[in-house]
Amino acid sequence: MLRIAVPNKGSLAESSIAILKEAGYRQRSDSRDLVLTDSSNGVEFYYLRPRDIAIYVGSGELEAGITGRDLLIDSGATAEEVLALDFGGSTFRFAAPVGSSLSLEKIAGKRVATAYPGLVDNYLGARGIKTSVVRLDGAVESSVRLGVADLIADVVSTGNTLRQAGLEVFGEPILTSEAILIKRPGESIPAGLDILIRRLQGVVTARQYVLLDYDIPKSVVDKACAITPGLESPTISPLQKEDWVAVRAMVLRSETNRLMDELWALGARGILVTDIHACRL
Image 1: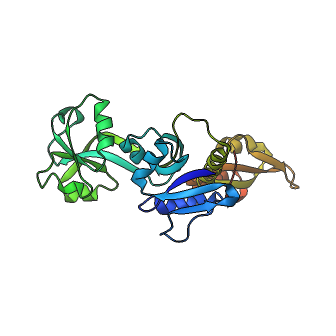
Image 2: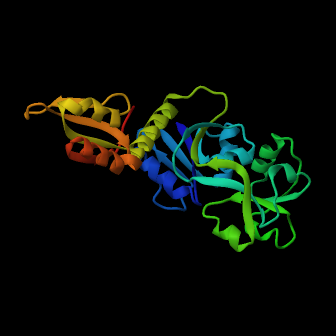
Image 3: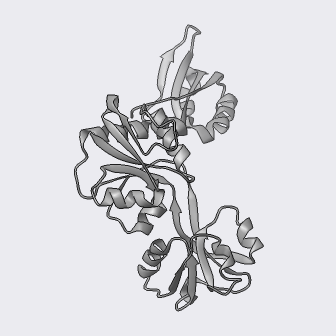
């Protein structure tokens, strides 16, 4: 039976359970449950601390798991990323006191406070920069004001928390992270895991795309298909109305309204958008 790790709490837990349910797998209804067996799919789900999942998978105790890319790198585990899941996004940046004019080249020998020492060591080591990394579990923004560190490396979203602490980001992002599916290192993918990957990929794609249907005069169908080329090719069907055709194509959800405007201006009518609940591509 395939053994899969799922975050038991934190920002990734709820979304991980949601995507697995959409992929057709049973999930626990009681947050106190540590293990759930989905016999119909041949999978056992283990609910673990997000920071521990990469360790269990990397050591070979579990075949696969869902965790953050940041947590995988920070752990130093040998688990391998298989699939990006398009949720739980975050960006890691360096930040220092406003006006300090720090750059990546100037931080050698300084103290860097972070909750992700492995990630920061990995990033700086690859660039030959030596610093003193101070590990903190929370409130990293306060470390500079309290004299524990000279700068920080942390997740940055709006930047409001940094500004309140008198800090500003500098340099390029250390890492852009998101939830990922990971597997044991250096092993072929077993049949059950291959099915899981295809199902999750189908959910990720279904969330990103919609089906766009519209009617268009034959005279401009080539221009319309250039606007909506689909993943491989749009489907074109004849209509009873002479010199008109119906077109169906998958388009990115984020671009739907712009594409509808362009198609309308081209002469398309009866433009419809339909959600995709699952797919295999």
